Amino acid sequence: MEEIKGIYAATLSVLDKNLALDIKNTIKQAENVIDMGCHGVVFFGSTGQSQLVSLSEKIQLINHLPNSKHKDKFIIGTGLNSLGDTINIIKISKTMNFETFLIMPPAYYKYGDEDVINFYSKIIDEINNCKIILYNFEKLSGYKFSESCVEKLVSKFPNQIIGIKDSTYNLYEKINIKNFSIFPGSESKLLTGLKLGCKGIITATTNVTGSLAREVYDNFINNLPQTSNQKLCNVRSLFEKYNLISGLHTLMSQKNPIFENLLPPLKLLSKKEKQELLNNLKKLDFNLETLKVA
Image (cartoon, rainbow, N blue to C red; front, side):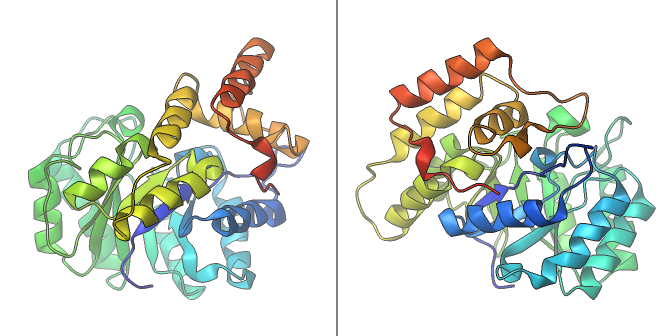
């Protein structure tokens, strides 16, 4: 894979009525997002219910990914607390020729920078030939990357630690490391981030805003006027009123009821919230008919 840059979606995991991972439709959804304008997708980020989908189902999906027309645009999120399972899923992915991974430090336990450096060191000591995008999301992991931690990791592993997804937003305006890709986790940070030297975004809502975000990105790269950024930010702000996974699945289920399936404790928006979301999207002239779904 070349330098990672552009608009990436944390793609949705599609489940069947028994709440098992629907391999075919999960891959189709990812392909649709790319066809809509995203440069690529990340499987099993937080939006993909990564902590809830079983390890065996993740492995099944990874085994099918090489058959996709967009296989060169896929990044694998590990979404695991276990160091051993994380290493194993990376090894399995590498046998399928996937080498780039989005990895968050383990959730639940309290730890500091040196412990995080040790966590990633254990992974890279075991699997030297891999590319890792750090995942900075304090709300989920309980840990917030510091500038010095990121700098130490990149200094120690310049060929492996290649970027960071910053969903805590304490780093994207501050870090400036050569050959290191920074991706804010929200469309509202896209244009500001690009001006600061960020490489793009990795977000949940680009599952539905991918074409708008791509237009903003392309206009920036080509020094053209920005005509879609405000609408893009407004749509993102609207989704942020709800749980992002619930909001996205609720919206997508208007096109295909398979998206109604969510693993507990996740759930769809209430009827009132759904109608509110749909009405406000309509006010923003956000056209649901343009969405491609599994």
